[in-house]
Length: 141
Image 1 (cartoon, rainbow, N blue to C red):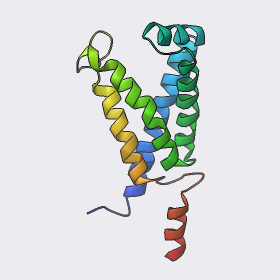
Image 2: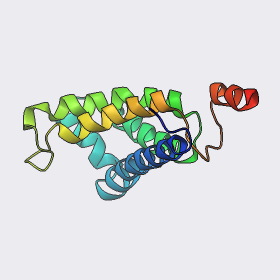
Image 3: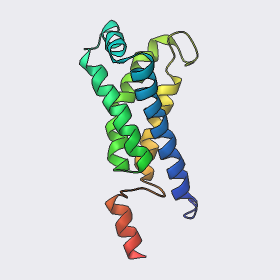
Image 4: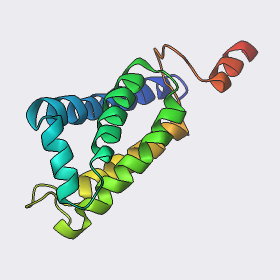
């Protein structure tokens, strides 16, 4: 049984954690550490068009901020799934453990599942823009 008193805070913790990880990967890793040209070059070196790097950076930074703030949580979580599915598929050939050479598929696969869980849970507590369904539930009470 779901505890209605604590579930919104669990969804909040998941939402902020996912958002912070996305922001860290998009801004700190891809922009500030590797640089945008380096990230574009990496995408091209693994067979993706270079413009995919811009889409991924935009998705990670914008999606991360939206999740942290609680803006359109469900659609944002679902829109981020292709990025994480792509990351999972890119790492499949490197084995299971993400700590291994080239990073394995365990972390991006887990991250993908957590985005699905977030989409199922919804906004949680302290969302700036709660979903319409949650607003209707609150009004009914």
